[in-house]
Image (cartoon, rainbow, N blue to C red; front, side):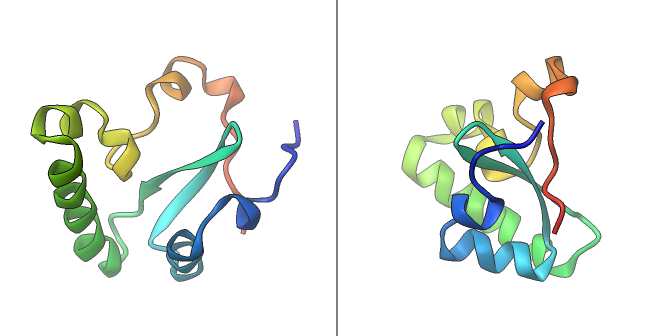
Length: 91
């Protein structure tokens, strides 16, 4: 099942930069993109805590923890329940 837009079209400049470094795995999430950090990559050890702290500052700690899939700390819960719909980006 092929999505309408390519992953490069779905991502902004920061997302495209992270995708090029290989620090995260991206998947198609409707019209947007979801991602999960690749913990073996050194850049993810710097960016993941930074993204989470920025998310805490913007939304508050309880909401940031509840929606941690938005910062790449886990996969979107809908895809965990429906893995047959998951389509990873093939760089």
